Length: 173
Image (cartoon, rainbow, N blue to C red; front, side):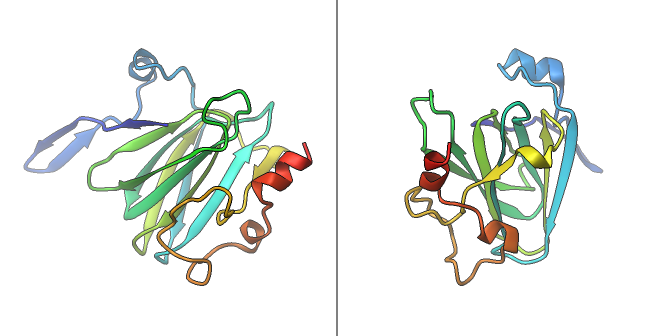
């Protein structure tokens, strides 16, 4: 995960910021060319989305930012050859500072909204391929993620409630 805080140019009207420039990103070590933009709106605080990933050969790198509101953004390393395999990292992202995170391919990604009416915008390096979709249960106790809400408070899709634990994925692969 790489935190990126775009420079803002402010004046009496407000501000301008460049959120993505392929050449500038390449200069800081991000080789991906992003091919799809995604948008997520969550009306309720405490909405959980994830933990999602795409399997090879359709794995996705992501560039995530918040357009309105605030989230706890979480990524779990699923790259078996990585020294941080199974480790997670979380960071709070919010619209006011424009910070965004780069997530390389091979990570499961999810977030929890911390404010109502939150909008999350993210670029991906490969188009969505439903037959290569995967996920891990957000509340997997083995991951030990410090979510700001408990299972009884979360607003979560039926599909995401059915995601397997990481150890179940490992046993089946």
